[in-house]
Amino acid sequence: MATQQGQQSQKSAVHATKNFSNISRIAELEAELKKTDYNKRTQYHVGLVKAKIAMLKEKELARGSKGPRTEGYAVRKSGDATVVLLGFPSAGKSSLLNAITNAHSPVGAYEFTTLSVIPGLLEYKNAKIQVLDVPGIVHGAASGRGRGREVLAVLQSADLALIIVDVLRPHAQKVILKEVYDSQLRLNARKPDVKIKKTARGGIRIGKTVRLTHLTDQLIESICKEMRISNAEVLIRTDITVDELIDAIEGNKRYIPAITALNKIDLVDDRQLEEVRKEVKADILISAETLVGMNELKELIFDRLNFMRVFCKEVSKKADLEIPLIMRKNATIEDLCGKLHRDFVNKFKFAKVWGKSAKFDGQRLMLQHTLMDGDVVEIHLR
Image (cartoon, rainbow, N blue to C red; front, side, top):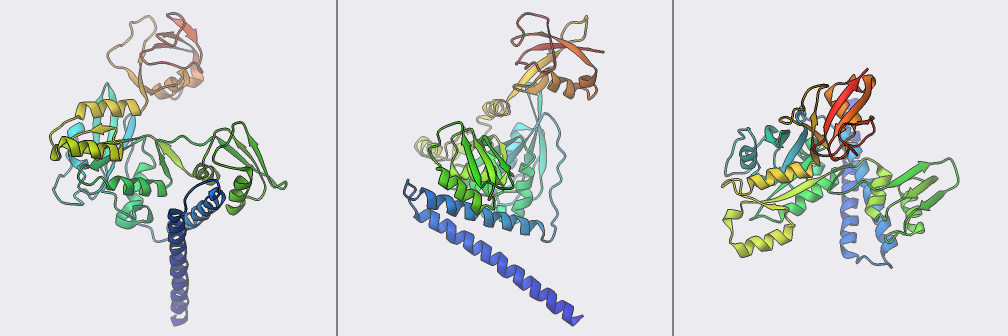
């Protein structure tokens, strides 16, 4: 028994040493990047350093997932979309949740008031939007500090991140964005159009449909090899950066839209407000406490979620123009059928469409037709 305990202690010590070694090496490489001016001469070196950091962070994430399990935040998704409120403790998230939804989140003038995920329902333009108030983000959240991993995990299934920045603590934004980035999330970014097909031999073969301004063939090949890809066909269709190439190779990132709201604007004068607004590049200025900007925020949320309204019509009856079905822009008739009933796609015969997407009123259209905001659709089934 004593021998077994000794072996376990030895393994734990080795694990802790490796863990510290990786974290220490990441810090060294990140410090090196900060000191290096990015230009054509240093482009190759910077790319390799970033690839090394990505590989070390991937090891840390994998090691963290094998560690002791902690209780996560179980949230059942509901409504047409889910929005997560992100911010430092006491940034005003709870007050905002109460101001725009039917929730009653505890509000206090001290940090860490919210200790669990509190949901609220925002009803706007017939859309039902689930808004989640999560515990405040702190420095090191992506590494697990302050239950940060569980908090950021809630964002993985969200449709929109609403970042709340306290006008008196604008530095918080950089911390939040870094923690979100380190947790494999990409805000307000498009997934890079890169196809990587591993092969048995032949080395790294690169194809491009655009001119690359941030990468050379040599750098692409070196980054691939640094990330343990020796043979592959790489097809790049957009002018990507080193970071985007690394993301494409890892293939585990999630891309969602985000809004930055500058809160508590009633606490500063106009000059200071303008300075902070420029610093954080705020999308909207609000005061959850005094309800300033609440209607504008609701409209912005609706818009960033890319919503449109489609009206349904039964055969031989007038269209119901009071209660629309909330869909995402560029949704097809097939998407509409799937939202109405799971059997509608299989039983689909044709649809009649009135509105912007139809060439004429009552045009007969099939499943792949793309709908537009305000369209009226009459579905015919077999």
